[in-house]
Amino acid sequence: MTGPIEEFRFPTAIIRKGEHRYSLRVDRIAANHHGRIYMIGVIGDASAIRGMGAVLGGKGDRAIAMTGLQVTDGQVQTALYTCTRIEEGYRRHVHRLGLGMAHAVFVGRDPRFLPNSHHEALWHVLMGTRYTTPMLRDWVPEIVGRLKAEGLLRPTMNFRCRCGLLTAKPEQLDQIVAAAVRSRSVAFREGA
Image (cartoon, rainbow, N blue to C red; front, side, top):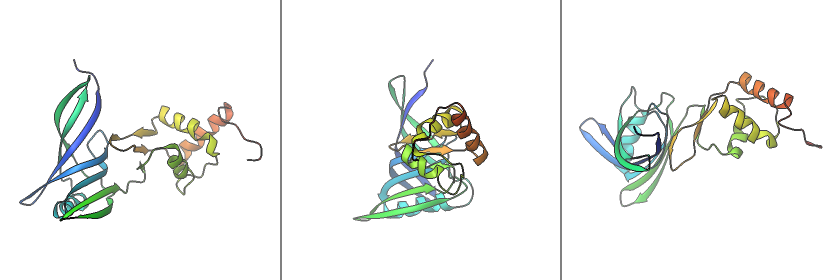
């Protein structure tokens, strides 16, 4: 019996559009366990980057084949994954590298997606327009722990990034913060 998959590595994305087949080097990816891509960074020929944009921006579920490695029980194995786009679409950031090459990052527009799940980034999301719960910055580690315990903040499957999904509704965040205050897990600072 094999243990849980410890790590994924996705060195290549293969996309097909019509009669064309493109191969791109993947430098980072965040996907859920169903293979939905929330963020992907690729390097390759500029026409292949345009092809990737067409596949991610198109209608329906077009599959993207990902060849890579998976590490299970310390053993590295070659693996093939099939990934698909998310319905909300993507923001595209492209930088030309010269000699017909480009680097592109496609970031999902899903409001639950966190391209960066560090505490400072989470603080900005929690203080944004999506949530109205009052809290202090010092409370973030405790609130994040409670969100994770409730399954409302989950990491995506990541390669060379630290992304996540924040699925908490405003009422759920209100309840979590209220419970933290009631249990005195968080404190009010003097002068705050």
